[in-house]
Length: 381
Ligand SMILES: Nc1ncnc2c1ncn2[C@@H]1O[C@H](COP(=O)(O)OP(=O)(O)OP(=O)(O)O)[C@@H](O)[C@H]1O
Ligand SMILES: [Mg+2]
Image (tube, rainbow, N blue to C red; front, side):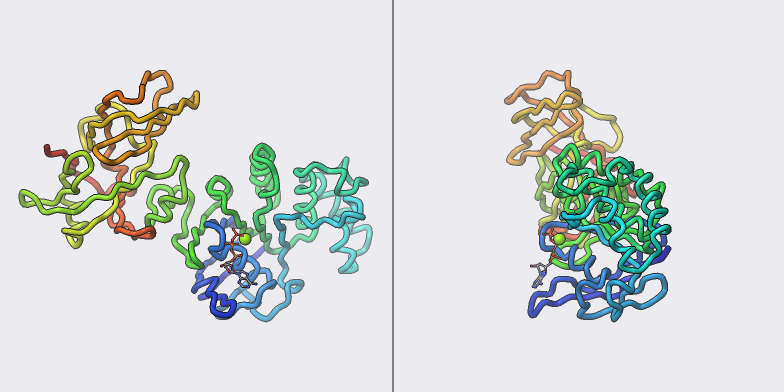
């Protein structure tokens, strides 16, 4: 059992600055997911923890011990990769035993460890098979088993499910989640799949261009993204973004123009006071755009038209046009008969609105996710 602590960790490959000043503490038995688009530095960060890449600056500490200069085998970690790298000519049993035999563990103890891991993973009937006689999911379980038998202080996972088809990936995700209840080991898990990140992580670290964008629980990141990038990365269908301008009007501030001007309540106006005359971006989750009037307090009402609908059975997705902008609404009653071209009124609860500074990674200027909003928003025509 161990805490993993990264302090100002950097990685440079020549003039490529792959990882910038990463600070992250993974608590003992915590499961932390590193997520972000391709090339953002997830694998590099993980490989530095593993000792497979040298660090260019900073400190990595595992279980209270600085491991910067320790080789991988002395770090008490076990790593599962995307390609499980099982030995094809060996049986499952011998694959599981391989690492322990290398460390001269007595065969009787090896058998005990393998029995334990096999029963945790439900792979007892597969012991005599070779990897190519296994399904993708079974191979993945064997690869996990190889880590479990070693009883490491830390598990490191690099996209372990990405070779599996969608159905198996969903199943293995549940198995990994169950595995955590049986083997509570400090874990760092890399993925570019936001659903895996949301469902598996105690906390999520969102990365972009080698920089940590935000660290928090799945719901914290979902509800109070620190910037537009985090807002856009988590959630499906994705957050809507609407460009507006902060304008002074009638002694107050309005956001102009999303259908009509949105008059800002005092707290929100105060948060945006430094942005008068500037472009900002409203962020709206699709599930927070409701068809119809909504409740009377704290609601933005918009009149627009329906562009198209996608019937998913449990819900409909509806693309709406307001003025020049289109936004996607989710969670619409599947029995509601809607057609492209129909006019529609819809509403957005004010306590669901985010406002970001302009730009792809514009920092959040206002987020009502924590309930700062007390006064209702109004529309003026
Ligand atoms: N050995 C290397 N030499 C030079 N540049 C590298 C090397 N390894 C990685 N990089 C660069 O470092 C950056 C981060 O790479 P990394 O593999 O950590 O990304 P990633 O987030 O894991 O992406 P993916 O989701 O595609 O696996 C990328 O720009 C990559 O091109
Ligand atoms: Mg990678």
